[in-house]
Length: 362
Image (cartoon, rainbow, N blue to C red; front, side):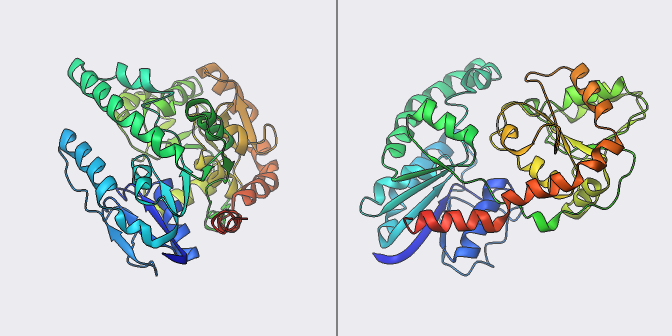
């Protein structure tokens, strides 16, 4: 075992998600080795990392076999972890490998306990066919005890927000420390103020973009740009049909999204019990207040009436209409300094300092 070496074990790099970005930054800036289940060209470039990269090659796309391959790979293909003093686990499946690291320090960075096992279990099952429901129940019966046994072996559990810290305590009965994910605050800029509000949440039922669209159908004098995609795209286009103040750009590149954000009056983000909500921090880093919802991680990022407006939990279109009327261009502009100051609390440097201290045992 190398007493000075640490490795991060992450589920997979399928796309450029928040978890993938966090792991990439952690390995790049702290010079850590990396192991992962699989990698796609759509995700971050791992070749630029200085440390060693280990691909477990979990490649199956067949649902049942893919599940077995994941279990087998994390259990039997991760014996190399014994060479490391510290292992940091990221994702849902990676913690299963903790059985191969009994003699060192085990740290879990928990983005959330698997929601299909816990707080969203009923929601998930209700969306499946009878056959899928039976398969999912069998999967839960096998995976849940394995996952909870793995969590029991962790020396340190890091939650990405107080919201997740509460979920960990409720469902896994473990204490944890909060280290918020890093925001690249220097990448986002205030470019001015054009006459539109921006939504860039994924078009998924849990993001509740449909409520935003319904609200703007009642405000023909207010423009809404939706810069994202997802399974509800056609449904939302149908809702917006005939309302010229609502436009869809589809999924845009990073540079275009930064430009759209930097020129908006404000952004609107009202997801259901969001784990953390990096979108709100990015908006504030651009000096743009957020019309958010008083649920989940947004309670930790948005300061009501200072860096945005938090509407009530389980909101209605009417709540959004009232908040948009309040968060006009003049009001949004006055919030710019507070937004930028609040976003700085979630900087990459702060994240790295806290992670370095936990890895080193301080």
